[in-house]
Image 1: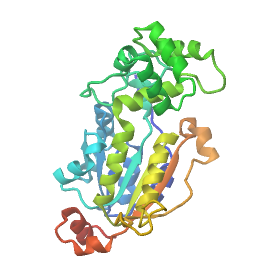
Image 2 (image 1 turned 60 degrees about the vertical axis):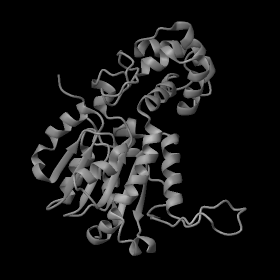
Image 3 (image 1 turned 180 degrees about the horizontal axis):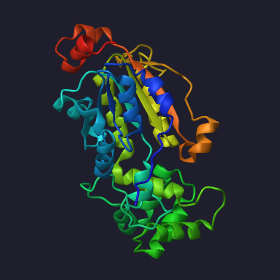
Image 4 (image 1 turned 45 degrees about the vertical axis):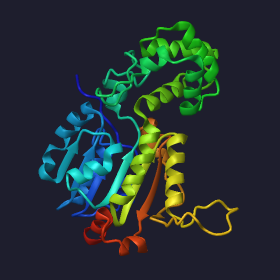
Length: 330
């Protein structure tokens, strides 16, 4: 059986946003099917280097084969991007010209992993990106209280029927498979009410909770800024409002100086800008791309560029900052 093909979302837009050039050094924090990675390596040759990171060992093995022809130009690491800085230091891969986060699930995870990411295929409720993780979706579904479940589904799924769904889950426990959970949710909300399946938001919430996605994204974004050289690009593709809100807020705060509340008469935060927004308007897929790849219809791309502060220029003791000045400019 052939592995599901994966179509990278906003591929050309991501390459332009990263400003990929020959000899550059780039990080793909969500390697997935390797579409973005292969294109970065293509545009970065000759001399370009790529560090590819993914928490999913299945994605790593599939993409390792796909990128085998690039040999010493690519380094693939099976880790979660929450360890981004440590990974770069361990592999002496810093500073860099660009860092990409594509936060969507790959087709392999949705269709071929058997880990229950989608209710379109019956599978056990797992949803872990990596088998080394302990918490599974089934643990949450079958052990959390009604209040805990409702809160989780509301917070991570933005589901208005969260209480109804939580109540319905408790009545039907134990629930071990994706199809049973989807059926329970559909009954709880009174059937379909639009083109989006009523289980969509709950499945999103469970996946986010199992993999600590929002917390890890916040931590990784902070690390990414310190790894970028002067004029290095940070590019993030998100797929739902919770992710996009985090990215938008982070880039906005890192692109301004003082972030003190308006009521404070003089600045006490001592915050300085580390990024410059390249495009204030979010970049979304074209109608042509959405038609050929409907899964990418909700994608939003944001991009910012690293700027070096005067404090960093003066600080010769900060290893990452010092290296970003000596080796990382274009």
